[in-house]
Image 1 (cartoon, chains in turn red, brown):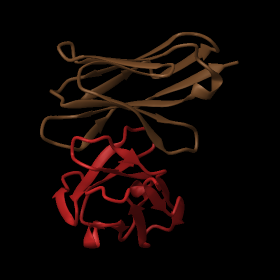
Image 2 (cartoon, chains in turn orange, brown):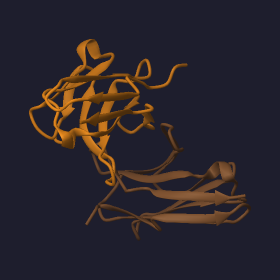
Image 3 (cartoon, chains in turn green, purple):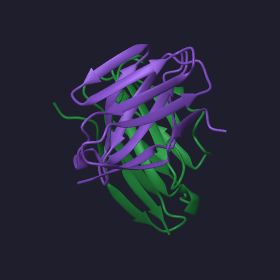
Length: 113
Length: 109
């Protein structure tokens, strides 16, 4: 069974450009989470989907970040326009129920120059 | 102060040593996760626990709910155990995780 997969693994973009990150959760997992680690800091929560609905988006930094999960399958996280402070590693995780074990993707390393 | 604190920040051990990594948290939790990340790799869940103790191979995780403290023990450590070990907690009805900064473990042959 495939695990959580994220695309791309790395992305280097210029300040002001747009980047879209994708996460494919484990099949059948209704819960999908986005997290981010900025260099030197702990991993922090961004948002949580239950199927296609945003359950909690309290961690989204600002309105330059837009997450979607059309049809309750894969999710995308778009950053537009990107700023230097958006650099970091973006992790996606999925779980079957909210109390289940979380399975993480490999992460997308985003560098904004 | 972060809700989840890990100590020590960095740890170096000799192959074969018994290793303990600690995690303290300041909020009420419904579950605590121990996660592992190898250099250049993704995050792997080692344990999820809400009470007592769990064991998997050479790894043992314990939690003391009253003291808000958890430990991860590695017996007969090996260089392949070198990784970042991250403690994360889930609070109450929330399902999102709150993470510690992680501890970088290096096991020397």
